[in-house]
Image 1 (tube, one colour):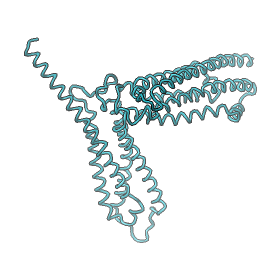
Image 2 (cartoon, rainbow, N blue to C red):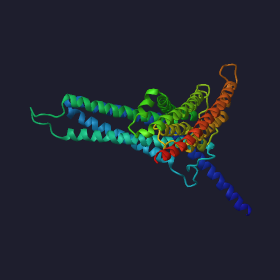
Image 3 (spheres, rainbow, N blue to C red):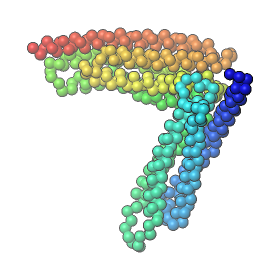
Image 4 (cartoon, rainbow, N blue to C red):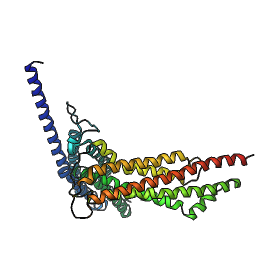
Length: 401
C-alpha cells in the first residue's frame, strides 16, 4: 500500500469515527427527548382525552365536546407518530452497522446498550397495544356522537348505570396505560442495576407464592385430602408411603427457596443498589441479560418442581428431572452472585458506615455455602425418592399377579 492509500484509509477511519460519535450523540439526545418530553406529554394527553370521553359528561352535552375530542385525538396521534419516529431512529442500523444488536463487548455504548434498548422497545410495544384498545373505544364514542340525537321520550340503552360501568372500564384502561408509560420511562432514566432490581422484584413476589405452595404440601390436611382421592384400595398404602417421602423432599427444598429469595432481596438493598451507583456499568448486554433473568429462571425451576411434587404421581416424581432443576437453580444463582460481587459490591464505599463492602462480601460467602448445602440436601432427598419410586413400580407389578 502506497503512502496515498494509507492517507486515504486514515481519512476514512477518521470520518467513520466522526460519524459514529455523531450517531451516538444524536441517539442520546433522542432518549432524553423521549423520556423528558414525549412520553410525559403522551401521558397528559391520555388523561385529557379520557376526561373528555367521560360517558356521564357526554350524556349532557355531546355536541359541544365532539370537536374537543377530535382535536385531542389528533394531538395524541401526532405525539405517537413522533414517538414512532424516535424509536425508528434509535433502532435503525447505520450503514457501518455500529448499532446492530450485539450481546457481547458493547460496554462502550453506555446507555445505548442493546440490553436497555431492547427493554425500551418491548415496553413501547406494550404501550402501543394499550393505545390501540383505547383508540377503539374513542372511535366508538365519536361514531355514536356523529349520529343524530334520538327523538324525545325514546328509550336510551345508555342508562346512568351502564354509563358508570363504561366509565370504570375506561378508567381502568387509562390507569394501566399510564403504568406502562411510566415503566417505559424507567427503561431510559434508571440505572442498569435499578432496572434489574425492578425485574427481580416482580419475580420475588411470585417466588413468595411458590413458597406458600410448597408450605401447603407439608400441611397434614392438604395431604389427607390428596391421599384419599378415589383410587384402587390396593394402591392406598403405596400412595400413603410415597406422600410421606414427597413431604421429606418438599421440606428439603424449602431452604433452597428461602435462600433464593434472600439473595435477590439482599442484592437489591440500598447499599448495593443505591442512588450513588453509576448509571451504566462495565457489563455488556449479554451479562446484563443473564443477570436480569436470573430471578425469572429460578422462579421457573421452582414452579416446575412444585408442579411435579404436588400431585404425588409416579410419572411426575422423576428424580433425575428434579435434580436437574435444582442444579439449574444453583447455577443461575451462582452466575448472579458472580456478577453482583464483580460489578456492584466493589462500588460500595469503603467507609466506617455499616454495611460496607466487607459486610456484603462476608454475607455472600456465608450465603453461598448455605445455598450449596441446601441444594445438596434436596438432591440427596430426591435421590431417595427416585429409588423409592422404582420400588413402588415393582411392588405394584408384584401385586397385580
